[in-house]
Each structure stands twice: as structure tokens, then as C-alpha cells.
Amino acid sequence: MTKALADRLAEAFAECLHKRVREDWGYGKTENLTTDDLIRERYRGIRPAAGYPACPDHTEKRILWDLMDVERRAGMKLTESCAMYPAEFRSGLYFAHSRSEVFRDRKIERDQVLDYHKRKGDGPCTWSAGWRRI
Image (cartoon, rainbow, N blue to C red; front, side, top):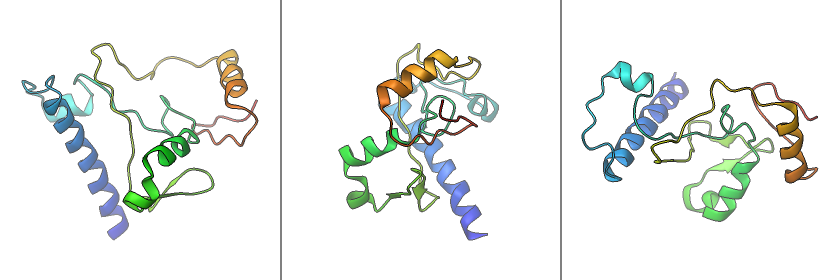
């Protein structure tokens, strides 16, 4: 029960931080959003995270972890498959551009996957959402 509560609180805090970022960056100061508006993401800006459809490749987290020295500074570790430990931690990227969007309804084609794989190299690939190495 404690882990489930910690997970829900982490999600709620991520939403709270996103609201604060929208206000601090100036484009959310006049937002008057209902709970339904928030659930439907009717705010400006996005906060995608590795492992979700907009960023399916978890291995990109390794680059960020190294750049920000996350393990030493925050005590967050990455498992071999790039899952965060403890699991109650959250990470994401903030994009404030008015035309930023999450690619929810667009299918990623095979040529895009092959091109990405070619640019990433031959290392292990731990993509979520049912992706497999091609």
C-alpha cells in the first residue's frame, strides 16, 4: 500500500511541477483549467518522458543521467533496462513551444525505426510499447 501511495504522490507532484513550470515560464499564469481540462492535457506545453510513445527508447535516459550526474545528486539509479530505481521516481522533459505536441495518433513507420536504430548504433535497445529490435 505504501508503494502504491508513493507512486500516486509522485504522479501528482509531477503534475504540480508542470503547473508551476507553466506559471514560472509565463504562459500558464492565466490558465483557468478544470480537472477535466488537465486530464485531457488542454494546457500549453508538453512533458514527455522516456518509455512513453513520444519517447519510446529508455536508453536516452542514460545520457541525461550522465549529463546531470543524477545518481550522485538525487540518489536515483537506472537498472540495466533503464528503469528508474526506486520506481516511485519520475523524469520527463518540458517543452514550452506553442506548437509542441505529443505524437499520440501517428504511427511510426518501419523506415523511421530502422533509421533511428542505425543512428543509435548496435547497442541494446529497450524500447517500450511492444517495440522489438528490427
